[in-house]
Length: 242
Image 1 (cartoon, rainbow, N blue to C red):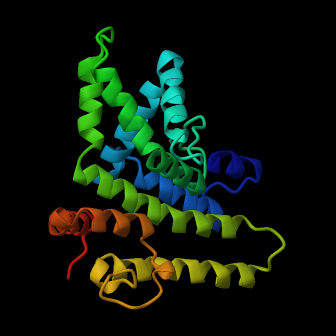
Image 2: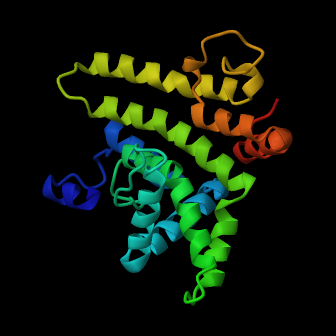
């Protein structure tokens, strides 16, 4: 695009090209998920995205999707709010709020996905038992579950930022001020990633509705025996030092 603009305006070598904030945010998302970049550091993210895509790809078509709907129907008898929609796949041409939807979709449907994979493993007529067993092992472990819940919380805030940048009928200074308030949440998340520093810690008496890690901290609480192991890995993967 830069080349064509330069040629059209006869400005080769003298023009400066930049991205407006909304598309720059989209580039942050795609760069974060692109293992081919020289400065790529988020292997944990790439591993998780690959696993999510593999599971969705297997269970989102043909007989497997029918099986998923059947499992969802069984779950809905216990919880009427359970419902399955067509699963989303990661895209390099969509904005971060779309990626946030992929993470959230997988997290919400996780019990259904696990049940499907387990039932496929005991189906005598299924020829892909080993494939389903490998996928089950990939998602039923502390590292993946902590990564998923943490990324879901992070992308919830990222999505909020992008939606604000997409808002029309705002003056530039108003959009900037409102966007920076959302950006400040990321600093707060770094300060409270350790549950003992968050209002949702059982030892704090503050309103836990202000927790910026609702999914991650809830999962950490449910994994108390493994808490320190998960916490150490989570910090190391992001370069957080205490």
